[in-house]
Image (cartoon, rainbow, N blue to C red; front, side):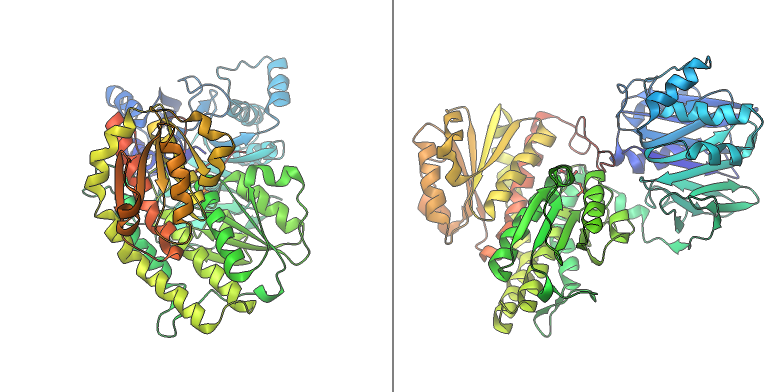
Length: 607
Ligand code: F6R
């Protein structure tokens, strides 16, 4: 987590650093800070809370300087106070950090024993002192950093400024992403290419263990053994326009509305429309030989994985395990030889998922990755890379990345089924046909936005909300509950509809709205029975179904949301829309910060 940016510029940098931070706020927004070199001194401005607070501080007390670093924080060690905000500094060195220095305690004790004083509770401040100590002992900045990097355990990216070198910036990466951007007579460091999008498209991605010395004479990258290395300069596709809100009030709203288009874009790359077949990128192994699939992800991506488990087992008859990434390694899973592990992630940087991926690779699994950021660590470590084409997702609550993941996973399930001989060509065509119907059906679902907005106040006043569904609507119920709790702060839970009677039904009273996802189809009657059990106990039901389902079962509900009638395969893609819109409108009605809900960050790069 945390976003970092650095500029070695020709002109003053502080405004551009703040603009860069705005594009990185998705990585955390507890506090922010900036440092430049002014008249031979390191000068900092830091502020608690959102970036606007730092911008106000800078308005009141501007920072000139043509070299600088800046940071937006998601607190790990120490509360989100001004003292704990980055940059952390000594007289000689200032730095910003993303990640965790795991051995910071012994290092801190060592430095305190030498008489050094600390002004924060962060793990980061030890790095500033360690580098400073080397510089004070007479090392060059380059030698100081090389020496200190060898003492740090954990995952980090760093950008470092030196008081005596106003023409230098040093960066380092291990476990957290860092890119170098090349401009006209200027060089940049950033957590991602998006942060640098308005400054340059020319980007080098640092590899694990790399560090970089940037001066006005040039840029030199070193590997983890301090050997000078070349890393290719790529032209980044990140566009500043892709991260504007347009006419929408919030990024989340914009991203919900983009879904028919980005799902169509994603499907286009996985479907050969003329042949009516699914098509995956070239592979180095065959699904026919894969005896078992282990799906691993976190949060919303995990729920996409749960839908995929249903599809893979149903179409391909291949046994699937599903794990939450943070549990995966530690439960010592038994992974079958020749198996495939499938990782799903919007960011491709989620620390838990990345660690699980490396664990699965070490256990000899083939690694497949469904990811939205094609330059991410997970993308680079995949044997089979299955990109989603959702474009940058800025709202902290994942929406369009989720439906794009579902699109890729449906195509994957069909391909595995074909390769395993469990699907005929006609059945494959059928799947392709239904998938191509999804964007239009999603558009039809969006047409009900105004109705959902009207009913949102009914939910906004609740303390607890339940979501119910069966089959693939069960993971959708879990996803609906997650969306609601993360942006509206209302306690919500998703349950398999048939599980209610085994305990959760005790929660029902006339204050608990129950959102039931029940498209008409094979599981409809059973879900409706469970819904009636809830109604019989005073539960206030909101039924989301198609016209046929609503005609049969809307009696006694407090509200209904109509969806187009769709094939069960694409129902998760379509029903994602009402649950996202409902969470969105409830959050707006409650006045929460929709795009940056409290305590969260978009990219979770700590375990
Ligand atoms: C919820 C949400 C999170 C992420 C989770 C995994 O709306 O966005 O639950 O899904 O943190 O992130 P990625 O997909 O980047 O690995």
